[in-house]
Image (cartoon, rainbow, N blue to C red; front, side):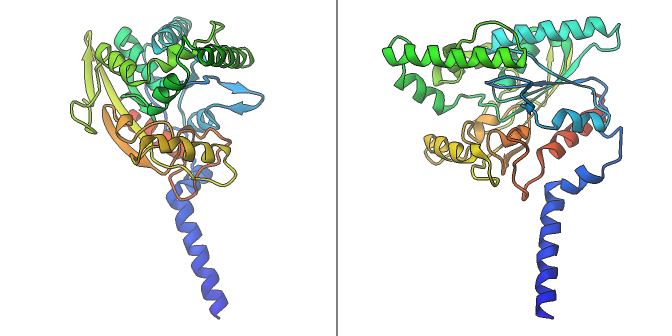
Length: 322
């Protein structure tokens, strides 16, 4: 009898945990229009930007999950290592081509950027607001990341170690671009890092302030108007490290998270640094790559599944007429 009670309690706990994590909604969702937004979704990757390499997807199962519930989804093809302005110009070119090929069906996009992809999205919003219906950033270090300061301090661009680091890192970035059929521009690791150290982040935010909080760890405007275009702004982020079994990124982010000296973070981005526009949530139990379901979906079963987070946000955009 006690064994049966114990078994029932364990099963109840597991079912409750999986339900909370959103797994059952993924398994049994039959609402084919749940994520059917008015404007297509453009997913913008962060550093190491790629779509798919050797069957490994940057947005693991997220595009197909959204499409199964009615969304039209595109994935940006942009340079693995570059500043957001250069990446943004590549994205604008891709968006213009999609609009032109649609014969008037597509005019705007719901742009959703992970990590540096959020900065790239902000550049596109400021430069070509006519193409943007909404911008959502995820785990984006809007006010910079101490990791960038550490790297540039340890390996300054003009030093011997900096030159070696630059050659190796850019070679890796160029290989990623080649394997993923991204833009074939040469990678520039220091252009990317220079955007996320303290001075670089300040400079970028001075140029593109829309949506940023005016107070420390606050919220930004939920809607901005740029050249007569009203654009909705959202963000979410995480503060987890050791979040899933067999996830190789867990140990890495547990180590890099030490650079934040006690501030809650996801291993790359601080909790307050991910704030932009309307903050939907800033403390998911997710590390920097769990946010986009990256490492083969090896995420915590005790947190909402990333695919569910994306689908629910698409539904939010749909209800907002976007």
